[in-house]
Length: 258
Ligand SMILES: Nc1ncnc2c1ncn2[C@@H]1O[C@H](COP(=O)(O)OP(=O)(O)OP(=O)(O)O)[C@@H](O)[C@H]1O
Ligand SMILES: [Mg+2]
Image (cartoon, rainbow, N blue to C red; front, top):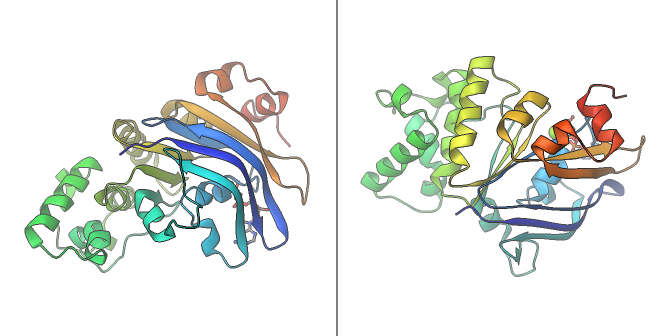
């Protein structure tokens, strides 16, 4: 639970296109790190490379190291499927299995891994739904389809599904961008709660959100069309938003960008 991430000289490609250039950064355990920066600078690409989802895209390739508590997830002996189990991901649009029941959505990963004990699955479902702050709202309709929940509830259901398998890290790519302000605040509160048990990396376009939920912030930028995205700086969130080291960061966070 809650492992440390060290990224070293990571280069990411889509075929011949060099999308992200030499990223080096660290995320301590029980920390929330926000990725910010303009569209196309490579935030999602870097995020997906942290659990080897990047290479699922045909032609996509990673060079460099991503260490999880010192172990390289790209080492040849490592099974990418097990990496994706220990490093969970939540996407921009809530993507529950719409016709599957709420309960089965939560335990889908465990069932896939072969767990059949109904009592145990029920326990896990309750624990994960409580962890995702959704239990009270769904406990009386666990057998109803996941697609029948509101957008914000569906996103918490996806978070429950991600934490049901007890990952070490949670990656979230703009998890609130499809949600209303109230649901957004519910997810932000949840992130702060989950930080006690997990290492979290979140991509967000919302500066206030980055400032509210994260401990450190990484600013990525594009130096020009066709150029790879780069990590400009990573520092304590308070420092990034009050006194960043780089002018480009200051221009971006103060809205004087592009
Ligand atoms: N599947 C793909 N195939 C080819 N190129 C891709 C693919 N996904 C992303 N790219 C390219 O890689 C670069 C980085 O994209 P990425 O999606 O990581 O940016 P981003 O910072 O997440 O942007 P946004 O804020 O719009 O989500 C862009 O030039 C993009 O066009
Ligand atoms: Mg993106």
